[in-house]
Length: 445
Image (cartoon, rainbow, N blue to C red; front, side, top):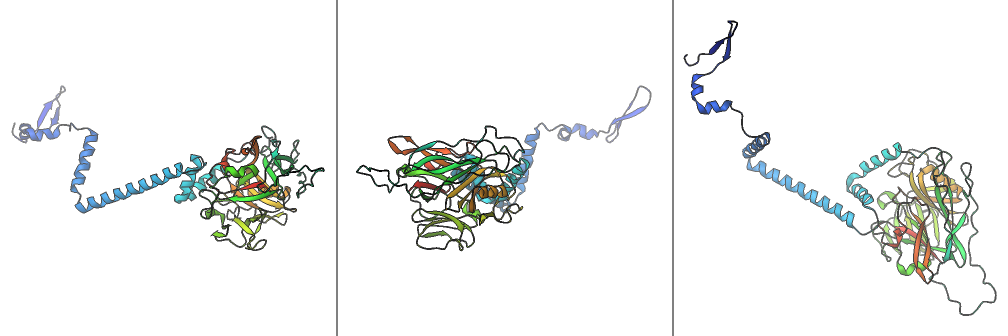
């Protein structure tokens, strides 16, 4: 057979079949014959070889650019990682989950977090109907007398009972939104007394006639017996004096009666902040404002209408717009907007919310609970007698209200907090150690 000829075979039936076309020279060429053998390298080794070949073909300029980009990516990841670790390990009481969410918000992910939260709450609304699983909460019994920093010791016996200190009349019971449960809307004195008189009353009620398994907590505080103090947090509202180190210090706890959360982070509060002679964040005319005077008197209203700057003002903390004005809900609470009271979630989302207001005689009212939207929160405030009220913070991690009681009879500074609602998530010691966010505390006068 000559070179280039083909081999043919004869099958058993006499037909011919071509089995292969083989070049004789190829048969004698061992190097060429090896071409037809399978490559002994694995697929992984082949991929590595191809990458190595591509890198070898790159120009020095191309390699420099890729290395520079890789270094930049590493530095960005390192910086982000360091920032996240710093956020998780910073002083304060916020759990890692809340710190993680806030870190994402502060680093450009606010829109993503808002959409996720909005989707979650919209698709997991509160149950319709039913009754509270454990019934209405019970108010804690009255505690011992809070010790005012300004109290004067009595050195001689008083033959007759001293006159009662100035105080407000206790509030009237609240009408329910639905067939009331036993004790619903009925005020009970709780917490430490001031000069023998109860200074805080609490009650509980269902916030609307539809979601009847939910319970909202309401606290009323006697501003004649109590003085207010604003305590800046470690991070919020940011800047300004912070003489107490973001907590209620030990030497102030003998007179401590109650404490509750403040408003939104300043980035979302649409307002400003002033304290102790410093305009830390510019105040906005028309903003809802909680104002504390030099003597500790507390009021809620609109800046520029109800209040104007004068030397008697100690603190102004603004948050959004009023929810209740003139004893009535302001228009728009039931809208879909989120620019006034919903912020990240919108007005109609049912979520943990809180608010503070004042009644006609000047008593301070706190409302907080789960499954509230802007409209139902306003409804409860009006039922509670608020003539002006502003929203505070929302979401389960931030809504907190505590009354305090003395742990040891011989040490008035040893106190224990009691939650307004048992399902408030934060511990009773939240404001007894440094807190990331600002809050308000009430003390005996």
